[in-house]
Image 1: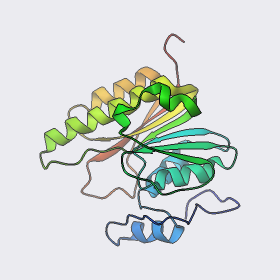
Image 2 (image 1 turned 45 degrees about the vertical axis):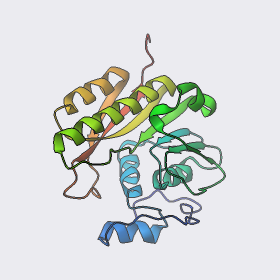
Image 3 (image 1 turned 120 degrees about the vertical axis):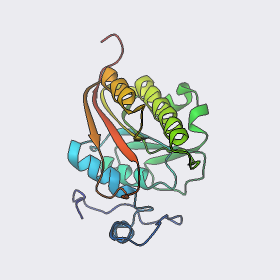
Length: 212
């Protein structure tokens, strides 16, 4: 495993797990105690850009079943906090994780700000696919843009953002929007991403609040 070595592994108390398929990445995630293979994506992003550190406050949007929050909670440690938000229920993760069952797009920023300002905002949100590629790309961009707007409202100066988006005609606009708020923009496709997937991750580092 490429995870940073710490005193204890990610929480293994999950009752809900999601392993679609039995490829090597799914087996690796299951062996590590992750709730879903998607945890390997944020693990790789963290390793490549130095995203998470002890004591940080993290907002995880579209968090169910909780694998990203699980990894983030382990990385930020007992002094850190994670708020995991999803319309679907999320089983308890650990003492430093609060879960909120809600439509991410309908939450006022003031409600999310109760644990903020945040050092990191994560979004693994994706639309329910319709089978029409153009429609799915548009919906993905809308979710990405909503997550970025929340990040811009809730991040502390110097904070970081990770957002998933489907590759398509709006990708350049999405990257430009990240660049308007962050000093560094990275485009990453983790190795564990399925070959048929059109998803990619835009990472913003060094948040610059408006007017600064």
